[in-house]
Length: 124
Image (tube, rainbow, N blue to C red):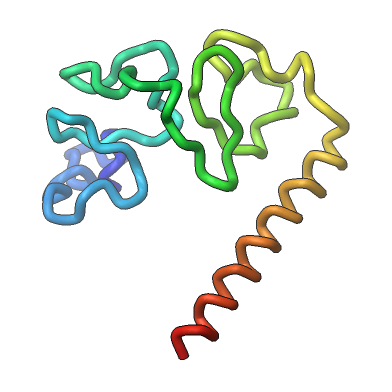
């Protein structure tokens, strides 16, 4: 829903998205919403091509990796999946041991949860 991909045949999953914002996705300067993985992938998807601007400053989420040379953010779980997910450089050629990669991801998720819990305790 609201990710610029028509999942429903009638496009109803993309209706009334303006009032919801982009729900954690990328909002083009022209107003469209894109999945974060489409930003800085060397192919413009926004009608104004704003998804390919300022890629050197594009920030990846904690559960994403930045592709070398392109700045594209991809889910960390895609790193060693046997596919070349980065548009310019095939990240899987340099993939570390998948078990080590999953352990690293689990540590990042655990650290994120600890931070969130600490923030909740501060609020309460």
